[in-house]
Image 1 (cartoon, rainbow over the protein chains, first blue to last red):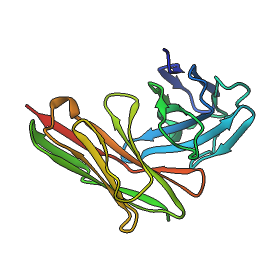
Image 2 (cartoon, rainbow over the protein chains, first blue to last red):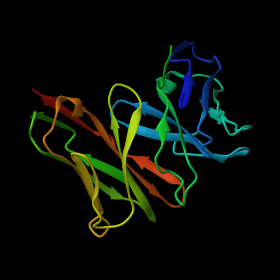
Image 3 (cartoon, each protein chain N blue to C red):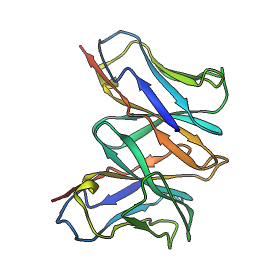
Image 4 (cartoon, rainbow over the protein chains, first blue to last red):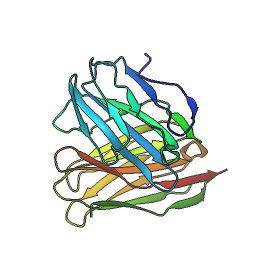
Length: 115
Length: 110
């Protein structure tokens, strides 16, 4: 079982460049989320999706776009990279239950540096 | 302001010790509290708590929630070096919002 797969594992961008972080899950989970993790800040929710075609903003959505055209994939797009977006990004998926954020399975993370 | 505060920030113990990690929260419309363990990379799920006073247990780890006093504790008994990690607490509130604490870094030495 692959679980949640994120690509790439590492990326260096120049300020102003755009890129897409890929996330795919093979567990048929309805819910998928993107987080960023910064030193001393913990994990912060960027965007999440409760199913194909449905997305919503989390705590820190500015500068990021998402879409969910299939159950399996949930890409995160950086529109114009800024040094403040240097972080480790995690994608997660979970089953639909009575709670939105229940037992989540995380990908291995993408370490992004913006110079 | 909604917030989740974990304490201590860091803890160093010897194998065999028992540790207690704390998570307090102030949120509107609390729904659930989750504990995760993060070693080098991805967090892994430990517990989800929704009701006060009901202990969740998995091996040497256990957790309990107090919705009146707005906190949860995570206990680890007979610690092992493999327990060394950052332990994260997260709270779901207001239907679909989620906020994490900054974590407690636990180091267990032989």
